[in-house]
Length: 187
Picture 1 (cartoon, rainbow, N blue to C red):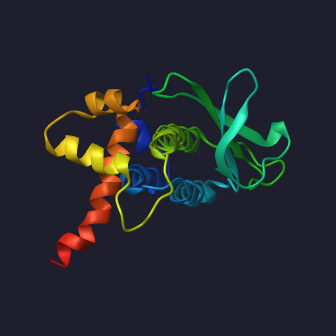
Picture 2: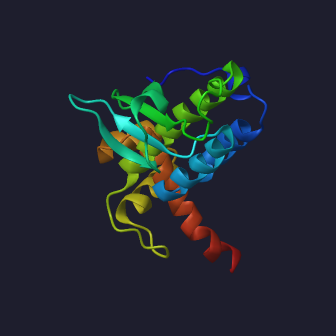
């Protein structure tokens, strides 16, 4: 189960970036877009690079952007994924001048909240990827999930039938609707 982060913590900090991130994250349908959004939202905090690591027997990078420096200039946030795996988001603090005090508690809370949301959406996007994406045609999985969703089945039941997670089913339905939207608008 994902860790609970209260809304007051998401709004913490001197910036509206965490709120912006939390509002935009569910519009993102591809992993590179998510990585770019996260990088853009953490950069004003003095964080020029990041990595999301899955903590198996040996930590391995799942996604991220930029270089991570020596361990003493990295801030890490542990996140339990909805898939039951443990992840850590490492943030490079090289944007802070040497000798500059560490991040204030509000900034740390904002970065922690954004990191948790980032991991949860990122692993859903990874779980939803299985076929080469055609920007104009629905994949088999997208078509199946959309049809089943429109029949009133819940994401969990659809996911069990497909061998996917409920968040991945939600991503597949969102992608299918995004692909169909232009055809519906043009008549």
